[in-house]
Image 1 (cartoon, helix red, strand yellow):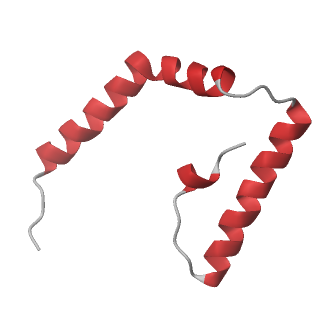
Image 2 (cartoon, one colour):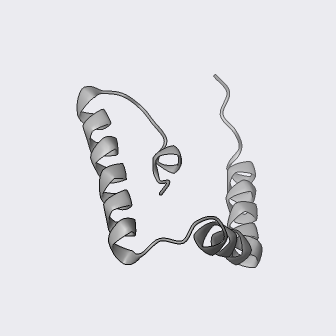
Image 3 (tube, helix red, strand yellow):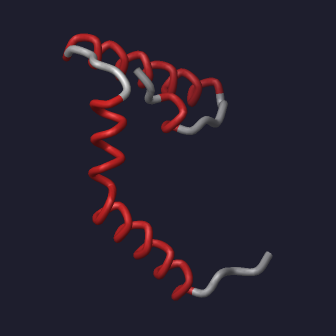
Length: 72
């Protein structure tokens, strides 16, 4: 298996970081406020349930993405 050069990895990481720094607040605002209105207790319950599912799946040896699990 061939390995990518370090400059390619660094430039990709820098591009992702720059894009998040410049326009990430728009995405966060749209997803955080535009989709659903929840109160603090509901958010805590949602995040707790997500954490329980992620930790349980790790114990069973299943792989999953945390971005797919963190939804209210």
